Length: 277
Length: 191
Image (cartoon, rainbow over all chains, first blue to last red; front, side, top):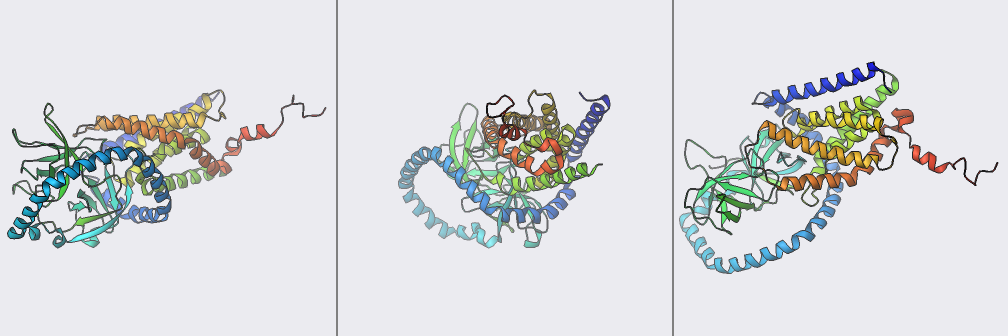
């Protein structure tokens, strides 16, 4: 059907493009392309932000449809979650009052007061479509005081940390990314470990490296541990809520944590620009 | 390069640029059943089917590169996946018996999306994943393929509309023309 010359040309183009892709993959390893990434963020950031502003009505409409479909499946889960939380609330009310009194005494509110650590509010305008890269791009960068490594939170809890910052944009590595690891502790028992992810499930974090015999049980909350050693400083200040333990798998030694922040729907986040780690 | 060829290249480049921006800024932030539609394989499949394997592969490479650059992902992974998808979408149109079959873009879109997502995941495994991988990933891939299948026909129609002026005969809807014209043995035709 096609002459040999056409077939050869096609194969040559395919081979050339595959080879170029493989060269790019190889070149991407290491930090050699960091400056190119910053440049790409600087150039493409404003274009993406503009596109995001223009497409907001489309996004909202499509999001409404998606939310409605998702909500049907969520109703049952939320009902059982509500009942469980009500039971916990009653049990913990007394403890909370006592805790508040003690915190006032110790002045911990001031030490953990993230409001005094320089919060920069940023709008999310871009996100990766694949489960393999849990990142979002925000409209604040080094001009606003944002630095690489700064923790990112929202009203519900920890979201991630700044991976790359350019002048007016930054890419945030979410806590559900395969490259993320957060030094954490169980709030109730003080047992410490690292919160990591299982690729593909944004609602299931894993609290790893707990000590043998450490107390971990369903319903306990997990918060950032801060820097526990000067040799291994943490990006995150102590006490930021991360999530709640949903399951403790004794056989596998895995503690499953559901994040407080809904990481699939992020419109605005806050970047802690002066974290006291 | 002929005027039509140059015009087609410009249209493909603009389509790639706008599609990636729409994907990153809007579509990626929409979650249906916990999964996100992925327009890139659908657009590359449509471009390959309409403009041929070389244009499909070039479209796949440029879209993939733009996605990786814009999202600061490992460069080359998306390009590699989409080059293969674009090339085989172009070859598919040449090898099937009825390239104008209504459901061909739907089947090609579904297959292209499945191949793109599975090969992308395999590439990630080959590059090394330090974290455990949840079985939920399989559900996400299946959901995305399902959503993409639903979007395949509208996306194909849109891409054909955009590329039609540069495609000549290939861009015309031959089914539509046949449908409007009565068959030679139709009783409606008077001798």
